[in-house]
Image: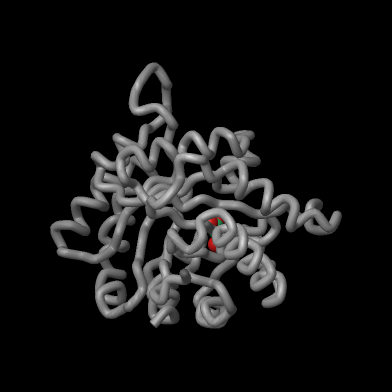
Length: 249
Ligand code: PGA
């Protein structure tokens, strides 16, 4: 069931103006040499431009959206549909990121609807889960992860391609990395959930995310079950992201 090639994903969040596009192109050489799948999730304003530039360069780098609305179109001011992301060149979409779950109060049921939207147009959803520090300290990590998996992965998800990113909320943007045991424990939980539900019929990349840096990327990728990395801050500078891509082999 595990992927033997990792997925290295760079989530730019709300960062990046026009000059970020040529900077991103400078990771193309490392991406071409790498055995990993490389994906960049720029802000929506740059998605079309970045996707076009990568296509013109013949780059293997995949682009994706950071979120999408569940409907195809309609009166939803400020929202972007999966159809629009696809039209702008996306191949993937991050859904249920903690900054949307917590910052925008998105419940699992909404994440599940968005996953259906992504599948409707063939985008690969990268579904994020992760416990807060309070939940971990209260011994609720397993319950939270199981609940998020159960409620964010819709029934419609059967044989299609999707991925899961485990991102402890307390590790995102903080420089605090979980212990190896904590990462492996979460990977085991995700993998056994997927095995119980899909019986080996799907092969998602199961990513770790949260304070991934050039110096810890190679080690994180050696941990049992880690099938890739979701990188925030360290994906913004090509020099750092290049080192992470190189660490993936
Ligand atoms: P970080 O963010 O690498 O800056 O901690 C990771 C994420 O939010 O996906």
